[in-house]
Amino acid sequence: MSETQSVNERVAETQKKAEHVIDILRDSGAKLAGVGLVYGRVALENGARALDRAAQKLATLEDRIRKAPEAPAPTDVN
Image 1 (spheres, rainbow, N blue to C red):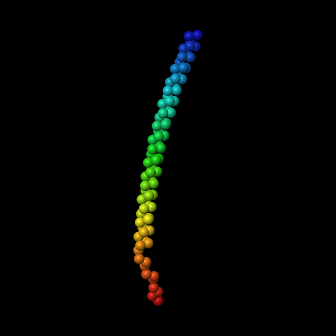
Image 2 (cartoon, rainbow, N blue to C red; image 1 turned 60 degrees about the vertical axis):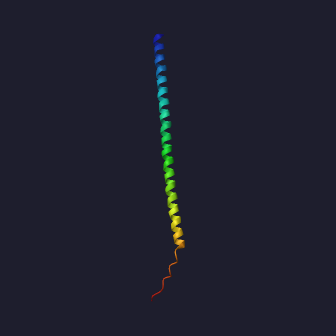
Image 3 (cartoon, rainbow, N blue to C red; image 1 turned 45 degrees about the horizontal axis):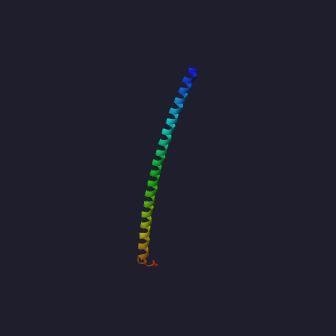
């Protein structure tokens, strides 16, 4: 009986250690996912700022074109 009890104790101890390892892996995975989400958010924010700057430059160019005097129509030199 003591041999069976010893085996059962070792199994219980191994299960406890395995659960601890699983908890560590789960926590590590959650932290890594959080880091990935932060990097993704920062990349999207930077992309949005770049698009906003491009849109502002296009608006400025549009204003310059609208305000520029019209070029004279080409004349036929034949």
